[in-house]
Image (tube, rainbow, N blue to C red):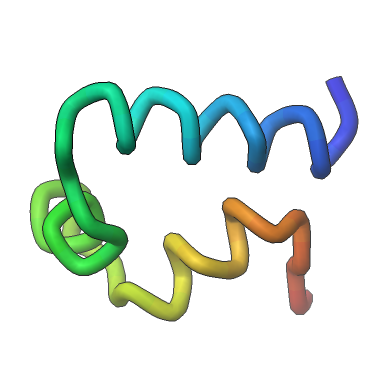
Amino acid sequence: MDQEKIGRFIVQLRRERGMTQEQLGERLGVSQRTVSRWETGVSHS
């Protein structure tokens, strides 16, 4: 799976559960910005 497909999958699951990026981040212990990066396929080493 490439980064974009993974990002679309995360967005789909998050929306199906009615969660915001911030809520998902809180649940996973990461920032909203990190969730946004995952969803857009942007990663910084």
